[in-house]
Image (cartoon, rainbow, N blue to C red; front, side, top):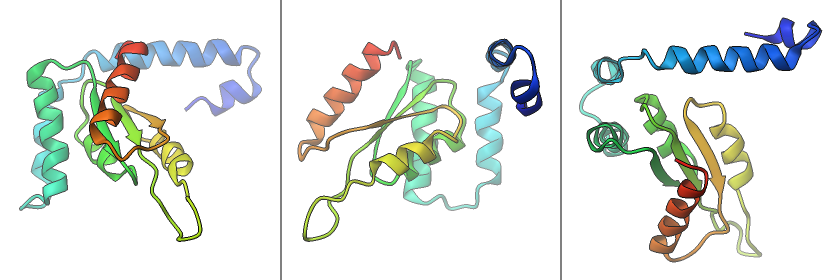
Length: 149
């Protein structure tokens, strides 16, 4: 949207800041309830379990007036499904590494985090991984508090 202004303009930083402010203001007028319902109308039924989880997470966050949705994911797919239903709050996508080859540890978190950046509302965070899911959740909630989510 701003490629010409930022690439050739005299004040690229001002152009980006102005557009960011305009986008944030415009998002204040989105009717998230209607948007959620319309998205559900176009999704084929029956919903898959993971699709249902994504839609329910957004609805639950809205009902609880949560300030963020925390998603633990390996591939990023779950966070992307949550983003599909356009929550009004940020999605903290905590990317847990996968153990790969038998000869060592293969961390796939970097490319998953980069891909998450293209989805609306996703804030990707990579972790070192832990066999204790509760510990990972505590760390994610702590991080969300640190960044004021």
